[in-house]
Image 1 (cartoon, rainbow, N blue to C red):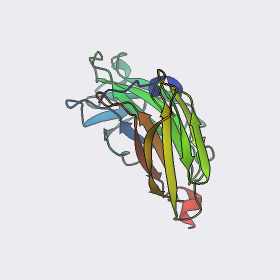
Image 2 (cartoon, rainbow, N blue to C red; image 1 turned 135 degrees about the horizontal axis):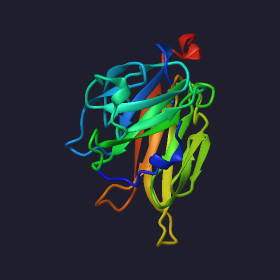
Image 3 (cartoon, rainbow, N blue to C red; image 1 turned 45 degrees about the vertical axis):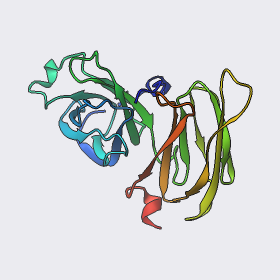
Length: 232
């Protein structure tokens, strides 16, 4: 699958020191080609750890050091941290970001590791339990009903939507899009979803090659380290 990876231009900001279990990242390789690597080394400036690059769900949370970091993805642990190839995929994480997503996209031109990295701030105080983070990666306007909430997105944009339902309830979902070359609204989906009040959810509206209508891909993010979740 190949998508217009706007996620590579939406946000960026990273750290050094000892890994802090209260600070984590999760990884998603959206639209990975068949020959994409399944694992790489994540180097944070002090040390490295092997990380998985899943395509259909978030990775496990990986601890990160405190402070401002430059993260790099490498095929193997560096023998000399001072001599890392500057072409290695990298991204910067600001010191104030306590949790983040590393969204990867293909970069076949990179000779070190064929990926690009996008950092998305998923700090608990900015993206709360029960909320939904939406990315519209298409050239169309997208909107509709998500339970008690309404979604309205311009092309190539993102937004956070408040909890669509209370508790562990099901809620109706009706999504449509407005094609750029057609004045009529066209449906994306009409269904029912289940709310998990203890999880954050990330959704992508994508235009898959060979398909007329956009589709929706969703990924839940439950973090036991969230103090509020631990008291539920």
